Image (cartoon, rainbow, N blue to C red; front, side, top):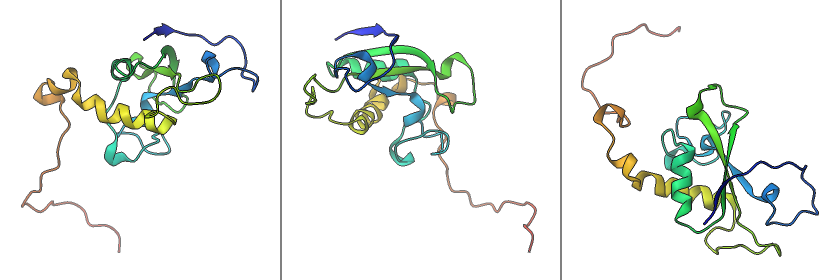
Length: 152
């Protein structure tokens, strides 16, 4: 299990092997963020996504899989916020040089993202959050909202 900060220095070409860092898949936190829209970069259905994931959480989850992981200090191009909490990208090696998957359960980028989404809520940091930081649940209310009516 290697966690390295990797910086690809060469441009991509089809001649590169699958074990070269440039050929590893990239996963940004925005891909699995339930607060993002499809236009903002979410890649999975909102119903299974996680609220505001961070790259350290994603890294911690993937370290248990035995896959080779690289962390890069990159900002997702569609990200509106330039804060440090929004930075970070993971590179994950999922194929051997011959193109066969390293692990049979992680054949595609989507399978890796689904594993991350299932595992992040199980992290201790997610389970021990204070009440004010936990996601709000919409509770039905019996009062009618008083507001302006729309145009007719």
